[in-house]
Length: 170
Length: 275
Image 1: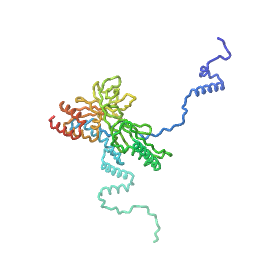
Image 2: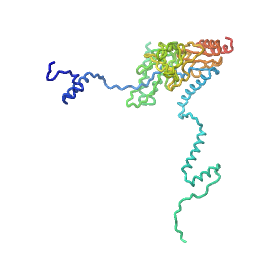
Image 3: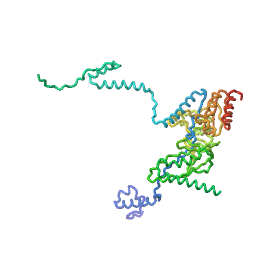
Image 4: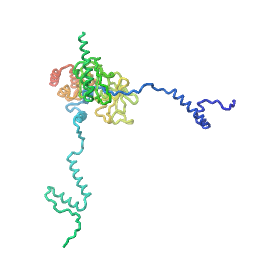
């Protein structure tokens, strides 16, 4: 094996990490530039002007179901299959609800608790919160007023405010 | 002949003039020429090759708000134009849906439609289902309610399955599922312990599935029965006795070409038991 001054190694071999540790910075730069040149030559690109995608205002729909508002396919009549009848109600009212909601802007959510019960609960909640944060004197006033449902008794006591001490000339 | 050509040219010119006028009155009136093109043909018989062409005014600063038009089956978009590709009557649903109402017997799978399929093969993780289209649809065994890898659904070859298409286009094999997007079955899946499966034309099937369908209302009065209608033309009927089931089948097959008057007299006779 002839030992040349600088063994003629291939470019790929020189590009490997263990070979580059001994290289100077210049050689490294040269190798990098050559690599970039190779890559940019092989890199393909489209030589076209920038095209803007046109907004499509025509939508294609392949199915008849949304066009004609077709109903659910399973049907049962006169109580032949009660589960299917329940399903019919479910699926068809679901569709009707969608239509109704589109028509009017106010959409009512499905509630488990009725509005009246909600109002009653809210009332008691307000009372308890008020009592919690009221001063001791006011707390007793609140309980007294609560017993009087018709609001007959009017509280005429003046509220005990701070009286500034004044000089009284006798 | 020449006179006809002249009037055609005049008509197309007037359409063009209408466009340039509305170009000034921007957004709100921009779609009027489009809808007007369609409106004059609603309820008329159209043939394949008829074209609706309308050119919207160029949006300079993009302030023209265009509403979307939805072309249903039978209409196809071709660049800026809409072409008719099936012969039939043009129908309209407000606000912006147009389609061609046509009759055919051969079913073409479309996404979102619910169909009745017959399981023909079990291969690995999927079932092959015959839906009456050009290809068999595939139905994954996980596409049933409550199905997991350990808990396989009880589906045998020859079972009837009611499912929806998730993928259905001309380039790929259609795929069925028997659950909805939330994972609930909603009546889909295997059905049909007894009863009879038969085939109807697609137009009649759509009439059966229409909201407030008269045929269904008339049918109700005859016997109590159960009906599953697939949009691929397949219908399954079950009634208390075999005779009643056969009567329902015959009645459905014959009422395709009847007027509503004839149909009602037929149903009355059937209900009285004379048939």
